[in-house]
Amino acid sequence: IPALTCDIETVDPTISIDAYFEYVLHKSGFVGADCIPNTEVPTDTTKCATGAEGQYKKNFEKFKQAVFKGKPDTIKQVLINFGAVRIYDGTVIVGWDAENWVTVVEAPIPVVVTPDQERNVDEDPEVEPDLLPYEYVLGTKAISTWGEVQGFVFNNGFTALRAALGLIAAVLVLPALLL
Image 1 (cartoon, helix red, strand yellow):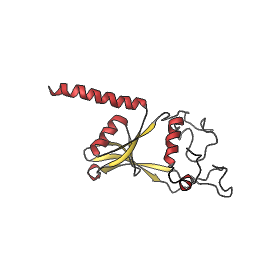
Image 2 (cartoon, one colour):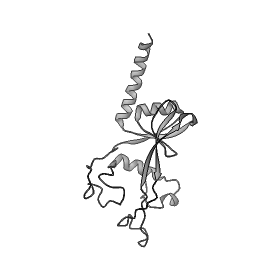
Image 3 (cartoon, one colour):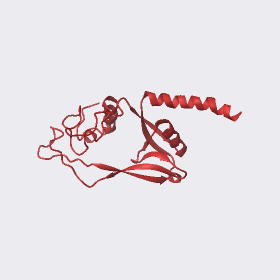
Image 4 (cartoon, one colour):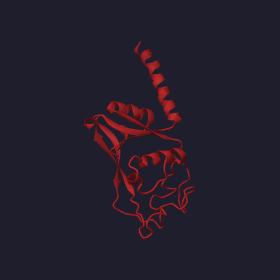
């Protein structure tokens, strides 16, 4: 993967920023906003920010992204086996009831936070990049409106093993229940 720059997708349109995200997630994971706030560019990513109340605990380290394509029954099975599902329109599905998906949607907050320092020394020193924080809104979307969709989940070796064991258990237990 070539070095990441702010204009990597315009320099080489075959390179997606997602490739970097997957690599960084697998190698480093991420910490909570109570440790390193999302309101500023951190000066040190190996410890919590000064005055932060959280603990330095890496989440999703060694996880990978798994892509799926399917209809509502597939989404339900993926939810059961792996947890929250992110659809490519940005919706995160966390569960369902009789008629609706229980969703979390990212909504931009109209407050721009300007960092104290530059994020990239190669950028124009006269222009400081801005950060746009987000809020997340819990909601519902009707299951009936969803046809076939594509999305992804995050997993590690353990979640894949858990899904395989669940399938084996279903194959062994279901016939016994039908007797």
